[in-house]
Length: 81
Image (cartoon, rainbow, N blue to C red; front, side, top):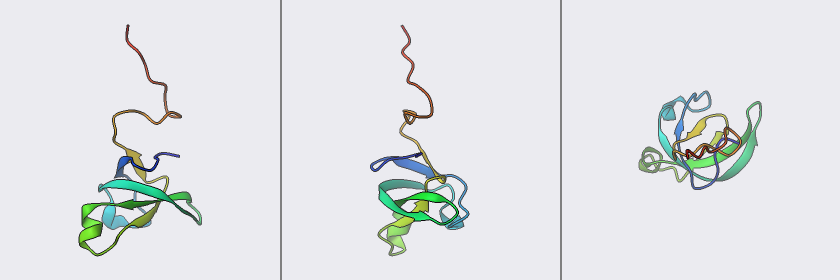
């Protein structure tokens, strides 16, 4: 999984919904899996709310966390002594 609930993320490749490519989203909760894409997340952002959508489900492969701390399974945190 790339993200978790509460993360802020940038939407990279967006085959499912090209209108949100590059958008900064907040990850709300897990969504139903996407056929052909795997697990998904319910996400929201200002432009979605302005368009009248509470949230939009997107595949896990699309959001990349921008918290500054890598996700635990991507790389280990390094401590510089």
